Image (cartoon, rainbow over all chains, first blue to last red):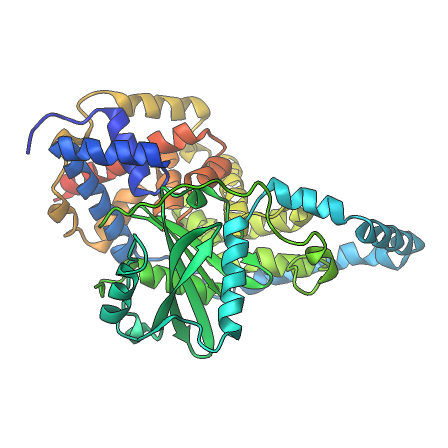
Length: 257
Length: 207
């Protein structure tokens, strides 16, 4: 290992690379630079170790019991204040006006949705729904990560990270390939009770990774994160909290192939 | 970690979906037809734990964090109609963050950094000699215990602490952090890099 210190800009880029925030050209530049500069590669290892440490060992401050209830009741108070005038003729007039706007405003809604395109999220939720209706939600049926991962190898350039979360009550049931805007991407399927979770992984340098992701589409919760150069989308009808837990477990699990 | 690659192709310029879908099926659009209370339940309540955790990191103690989250929730409720889609968690967290600073400024004036202080901190960090030249090896980092780690993060100056927590604890992306902390993405990048360097340095010093 050399003792030359990496310059600030390179360190910045390595951080952004590990966070999955770089476009393809810059990501390639960083990996090439790390190959040439051991000090930079070592810095990357330290950052990864630090991130892992935070994920695994940082205590999560528990919300005090009762806080949620206090918030709900104080908001409930505001709500009652706000509801009072709605019995007046003004509210009736307003609701008629609103109906008129809604029925004539499909273009307005489309314009809105174009401001924040959610192509990936929409496509993935559609695929999730399709999978729920199909005879099998997966193309390869196996609870064994050693079977699922190689299955992807033959079909897609990027084989995803596959972890075993059986002990945490999320059972791997298999995998399938999705196609988003003509590109094949890998999707793992986990099950908790009767709920399925579709977990799609896309290289962070892909154009999809830059897209903003809503927290829910059509009532399906979505958790999106990026890690080690890969962007992940977890989609399920599980409660948002449980899906967050799943994402957290997946991120921190050591049971990797 | 294997680096994976994929061919970039052009995106279709618009979402390929029927224009009427969102309008026609109100039951499927999570927000249409909901009153403020129902919106609050959908948008804010699921993220109260995250809100509390961030408030705790920013204020440093439980009672202050509770006050901040209560305040922030009321603010979020009053602004619930202004929520325009996007990630509701980062929307709420940015409200929590702003509430925390105004709350601290009012109730704990000595703990708050002014903008000038922030600039000074950033400059301070760019001085040579306080960087990664002799930071610990990855294996050394891996041996740090939970309390050490918590204390080291808590000791970071607030601009670094909030950036690090939003990214590495809450998992927000750079753009969301930039919006929540009201700085350009470039500043998020440099704060995050420096926060991590500082943290590694102080974990090493502890040992």
